[in-house]
Each structure stands twice: as structure tokens, then as C-alpha cells.
Length: 323
Image (cartoon, rainbow, N blue to C red; front, top):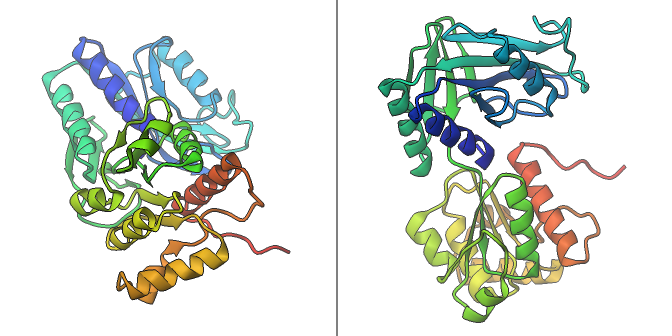
């Protein structure tokens, strides 16, 4: 889940508490080159007040047009956009994709408010939950105790897995870290930065980002990292970078990386094994050097390569070998 979807939940709750019905949309499936993955959210009160995204804009426009015309009267219904769907005669996604969307009408009731508050609280506490919705609009939340697809459409209900925000934990500050933070925020990541060095914290001037004055390794040891977390060390200071990796490999973080040339990375791997006691399997989890090999030289280019590799890994894609 990213911060855009969190904004959808926050907006839906605010509108609901003001006494207005909210139409809450969830992408169930995509075919072809659809821009938003299953589980993505969108909420609207009318054509003016809405939050989130279902596509690059064409689906939202069609949805809001139908909403203004009173076209969504059911408590819960599935709508298809693109080729083969009910909307395909008048709407075709420019990318050739097809979307199936769950549309719920959330009436301004105490039950709806409680449901959205529980969902908001679960996300704030970095919990994984399953949201169940049936054809009558009955909905519930339960702990996610099993691995499974983000969306599961059954005969009686629809289950949507909702997890913690995708998080970038920057272990220490640097010019490269500043660009990573800016790119990550633009991509909808939650960004956390830790650095015990006062001078480094003063130099790190990224609007909207607070630098925690403690060792990244201490933060990780205390709070851990959920499976939607990427941990990146970009300081060239072994006291920060190495210690952060020693703790991070013991977490469920989906991405670990440290900046440094090939020779520097080889020496770091030796230190992590000799001093940190890391196993070959743990060391293999760490991207050293970090990022995609795009010939990056400047801090901005390196930051771009790092975030591109994080996005690629989170999407489950492999790097294609050069032809």
C-alpha cells in the first residue's frame, strides 16, 4: 500500500464524519497495460471532491460522470472498464487495458465510521488486515494470517488484503539520500531517516522529512522493519552503514542496499561476516553496490538508480541481462 491509498482512507473518513455518503472504489483486477495494480483505491463524494486514482485519468472521468448522473445506486457492485466491459462501448483505455472495480456506497452511519476508523488504525499500527465485502455491502476487517493475493473474488464475498505503507528507511543522510527521499515521496512511499550526526542532520534539508537523531541500527532493533520496507545505507560511514545492515538482515524488509564501489562492497561483505557474524545467505540479501547499473555518476542519478531498483524489486521483476 502507498500513501495515495492512505489519503483515500483519510478522505473517506473525513467526508463520512461530515455526514455525506462516499463512493469507495477498489481495483479488483487488471488486464493489459493498466496503470494501477489490484487493491488500488479511489473515493468520491461528487465530481469535485475525490481522492486517489484508478487509472491515468480516463476511468476516473467516466466514473465521476456516471456518479453525477446517479448511476451507482447499489450498496456494492463490480464495474468493468475497457474492452469487454459494460463501459467498453463508450470508454476504451488508451493503453488497451481492462479494469474491474468494486464500487461501494458508504452511507454516513456509525458503522461505516467505525469500519474506516478501524482500517485507518490498522494502517497506522503497520498491521496487515483483510477487508471483506459482500454483495449487500456488508463489510468487516480481520487479521491477515495467511499469504495470498491482494484481491480474492469469491462466490459470496470479496477479500482485499491491506498492508502497511511501502516504506523507505534511509540509514544516515547524504546528498544521494536526499534525492532518494524526494523520489520516494513522489512515488508515494513513507520515508524515515535516522542519523545520530548533528552536522549531517542540519545539512539534510528535504521538506516534509524529519531526521530522527539516533543510529539507524538502534531504530531497527527497537521497531523492526515490516515486509514493505526498503532499508538503504548511503553514508560511506561503516559505523552507520554496516551496523544498519547487521540489524536489517534480521527483519522482513524486502530490500537492503549499501552504496559503494565493487571493491568497497567486497571489503564490507568481509567485515559483515567477520565482525557482524552474518551468514553468506544474509549477506546475499544486501545489494552491494546498491541500485540498477545505469551508469549513474551524480547524486541525483545514483538516487534514481536506487529508487528504480527498489520499485523493480517490490514489483517482483528481474533485471534483464544485456543483449
